[in-house]
Length: 138
Image (cartoon, rainbow, N blue to C red; front, side):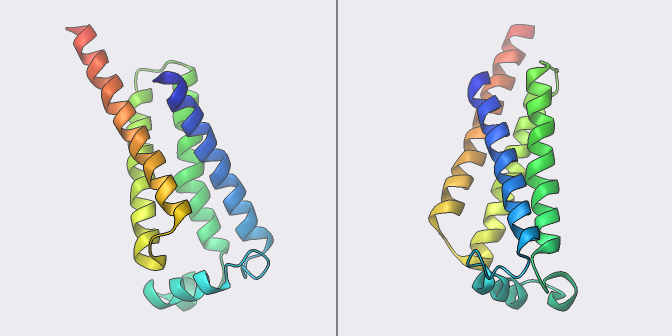
């Protein structure tokens, strides 16, 4: 389980960094097909003129919520910190909530569906490890 969790936290973290970089390099989304997505964000999210004129803020949010948190969880896993499994559980929940928001804005799509499964696997693996740790400590 630990190897799977390490892989997922690093994979998701790296993906978030790449996604954020893509949003900052081309904040309009024109080069990567994001213009229609930006219009959907503007239509469904509050204060579109303030937060969704482009993808810059979205990139920061992606990096903060799904990049830095995943890297922090990976660090705790590699250090075998007692809170590592809790961090992985929180990361899995954050990722699933992020994807639910994507589904609400853009609808179901293959990439979002796959990342939801990644978050679910993270959360389930963390719960299994936490239960195992709890049994061992008794």
